Length: 372
Image (cartoon, rainbow, N blue to C red):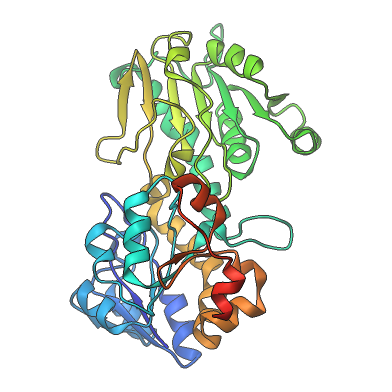
């Protein structure tokens, strides 16, 4: 199979879909790897690293898309990239289709087959290709929130860990999954007073057993959430419904109940955001103010630490990428129901139910699609 990796073109996206190690593995499996020049530069990988791995370097993304049987990326294809996709081509990347009707309709029109990292599952019910970036984003969230809290950035001017005689920042993390757990650990490590909210009693028991008094946890209800949000200096949104649009947990009206200059960090922004006032921002212009509350809603947070993120993502995606290349996507999905769960689009048909519900589009069973 010819595997192509273009340079990411989303603003301030420095990650790359394939590491040189992944390229080497693919070449050793008998495949041809085509890399756009400078695709890995933002993550610290030079063209020479890919050449040493056996890959071919081309000058443009157009050459990659025109030549490759499978396109491997990081972020969802941008509008100009979607125009280059063709019928029968395989796309393997993050998609986040539920809040993005334009991308969804373009992928359907292209006739390509698209497998989304964020809906591939594993035996434990986890999301193995989303987890590495969730870990990165979770660990970054308190760091970015602490920067947002600085007075020069419009925040309350509160130090996360306080100082002797002055209490620490109060941080509320909504969602106790991968993102929330890592966010809580780092925020607590910075000295903040942290409370995690979740609706799974089993998850709350796990957090209590593993982390004890490192941070607090509480069952999430509408009342308990807004009570804690009123007291918070920082609120981190870390709620995920796989493949679906994120639920809105704090309304615009409720912002008036928060402390002036409080910071909101919406890690769920890729899925539409979990606050009513959230809208996607970039690393170049990450913060905006709504009614005195500072919002940090960068849609590709892990891109800020591109080398760590690229290597972590590559470690997770490589086995699936090799299976798709070695067997072809249909056989790979037939052999692995967890990979089949990643199928979102095939030959003009939507194959993921949560996206269909969010966008009002008819859905074909992925099992039917793979056997067609």
